[in-house]
Amino acid sequence: MIKQKFTILGPSGVGKTSLMATMYDNVREMFNGTLLSIRPSSNSNQRINRAVAEMNAALTPNVEFEPVLGTSEAIEYSFSVGMNGNYYIECAFKDFPGGWLSDDIDKFENEIQPWLNESQILVLPVDASLVMQYNKKDKKQREAVINFCEIPQLERIIGDWAKIRKANYSFARIFVVPLRCETYINDYNKSQLMYSQISDIYEPVFKSLNNNMDSFDIYYCPVDTYGCVKFLKCKWEKNAIGGLSYRPTFVCDSTDNPKRIPRGADEIFAYMLGIFAGIQYNDTLNQYSTIKNENDWTLFFADLLPSWVAPDSWKKIQRERDALLEELKAFGTNGQNFLLEIVKLLDNRTVKRLKRLQI
Ligand SMILES: Nc1nc2c(ncn2[C@@H]2O[C@H](COP(=O)(O)OP(=O)(O)OP(=O)(O)O)[C@@H](O)[C@H]2O)c(=O)[nH]1
Ligand SMILES: [Mg+2]
Image 1 (cartoon, rainbow, N blue to C red):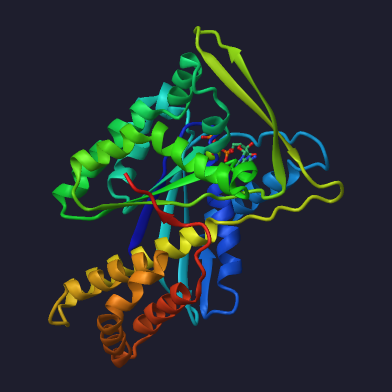
Image 2 (image 1 turned 135 degrees about the vertical axis):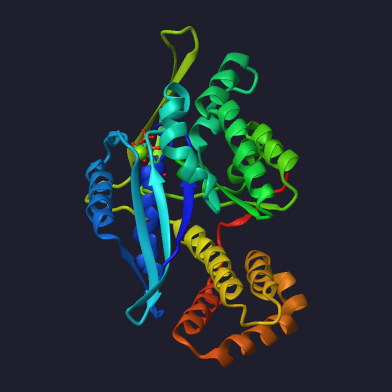
């Protein structure tokens, strides 16, 4: 099995570990009623369970919930996805302490950069509460938001990633994932505002991608890793180096026995799976060269996925899609049946949160 790598890139405390744990939790549910199954590698299993348990333990009814402990070293997690006892795709992710982006760039470069260079997908978690709660007229607060989000670092790192992908003639896909967004996501106006504030703060990062690469997609998908907490208040305080630091407080919104209701991470994972499946299948075909046009399959998934986001464009490619599906069915091997199951999964899903981000 080839490792299909992705990187979740963001500052300390933005929610990288919580997002990864939520993704795994959410996906198991998403696979219910399908033939697909997911299996964490043996060393990931315990760590994921621990991360989920820590998130659950942070919840006490009507009480401010405590931040879970940050990550202290680089750790690889991987999940294999398969069907009928065979596993075909290994989705792998390297978690790291986000603090390395600001105060230990050597560690980042030694331990994470090589992984990032090989990552097919980048996920950028965004602290939605930070981006929503600052006062736009206050220059110092805006500066603090830009620094906290590590915009200059992300701009440089993503520009370099884009160059590497361009040199390899590959496509770049980025998921922008607002976290701590529970207070904004269910209100139409606030969620629109969240989209535009994030587009504004992250503009230099998207530009850096645009300037260094021609073929890319940026998707936007807010995720609730808790789904049962709400924003209470925030404090801006002077820090030791003369800037501002931001401290939000969230409270559990249930009076008894709070339970996490994660939402959104399954949409990201389903989409990533489609991307990995396309890449992997194409690589296999290139290797064995059994089909006339090796590009068909990448195009197939490249077409399938955006249509999944915008069902209107679906009809336009219906004929090509049907023809390719027939071809896929004709092979009838386990690997191809697995791909058909992924197509079915994508077809049957309603997209609630995921959309394209326009730059
Ligand atoms: N309100 C709210 N809090 C969240 C959400 N997701 C994560 N958090 C909180 O954000 C804090 C940081 O989450 P982590 O997942 O540890 O962040 P990280 O990016 O892995 O941090 P480092 O490991 O230090 O790089 C935790 O205390 C979580 O409780 C969310 O969707 N809503
Ligand atoms: Mg972490």
